[in-house]
Length: 218
Image (cartoon, rainbow, N blue to C red):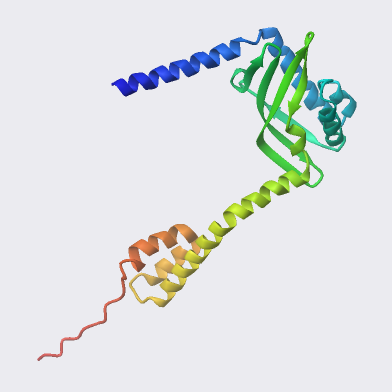
């Protein structure tokens, strides 16, 4: 019972903290932040680098230059930050961080539903992008980099699984036992799943066809 109460208390505190953080931002500021992001998406899809520069904080010229280089290419871009209150975090009175999911496509590449972030800073009545990583993900090298990492991490696993399947298939072909043809078909069409079943049900138990014994006693 004590553990349950502690768990419920932690949930309450987390929810209260989240609600407090979301309530720090006024409804009007939320509208303005969303408008900044909508303008960004529009500018990217129209390849309008000058419109993008108007949305970047004047305090970060390097960021402005980097983003302009990226959005001058032909890129289709989408952002999803709904529900808004769950993706935004207050940093200070005039600064917030927003996490969003994006999809983008360019010549010879596309990427879907990965995370990016925006730090927006208020200046007067407007919100400007003070920091972000979205522009670093708008190119083919980023997509191929993800694919390369997947191959590096998962290739050894795929190779092991493949050789395990081959091992079970060869064992099945060489082994003499009942329902051999059925297992060969299963191993060919169900691959890994069938090879795991075969290992535990046939190979591990060393199931073989018993030789016929003839009673020659008269």
